[in-house]
Amino acid sequence: MGEKKRGHLFVISAPSGTGKTSLVKAVVEKDPTISLAISTTTRKPRKGEIDGKDYFFVSRNTFEKKEQNNEFLEWAFVYGNFYGTSLSTVEECLENKKNIILEIDWQGALQVKKKCHPSEVSLVFIKPPSLKTLKARLEMRGQDSQSTIQKRLGLAKTELLKSSYFDYVIINDKFYRALNELYELIEHKMQ
Ligand code: 5GP
Image (cartoon, rainbow, N blue to C red; front, side):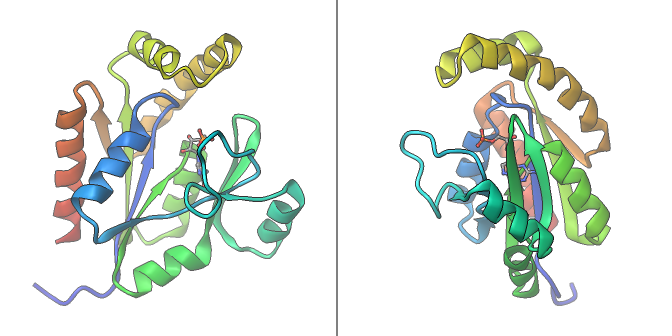
């Protein structure tokens, strides 16, 4: 096998409440050689979230300046807030032969697919087993109001249609099964 020239970029997207964050966290714990990119957002931190660990929390003004300076590989307006991925962080990782995961929405994922070389990026979409399960998970999470849950469910229907643009689709029915599938896919790509 030839020497690896650059790292690989994994883009993971899913409707809110699909369990994407837990899956990605578990994959990174299983294989610490993969790093998880920290996004920049204009969203206010939730209870327990730490600036520079969960996100870089910035003002709308700062976000716009970064966008104008072309500091983002991709950015999108999601559920009422701006989110973006640092171009230099991703480029540095790939250059140093490190593999990196972006946990971003489908709009951002499609921008990444357009901008990166196909051999360097894999787009993975995580699906809930059904919309009914998704509703139950959002309610159980207890993080959002009923109106937010309804809004997110409405959006999920549109988001699920976008899975056809992704390279891989994983159904998160049983957590450990989905985790294994994601882990194997990632390990296989990294060889
Ligand atoms: P949350 O506010 O719940 O952490 O994230 C809301 C949504 O924004 C999720 O779908 C998440 O994947 C997405 N998101 C987080 N960071 C980024 C980013 O850097 N770019 C894009 N396009 N979406 C992001």
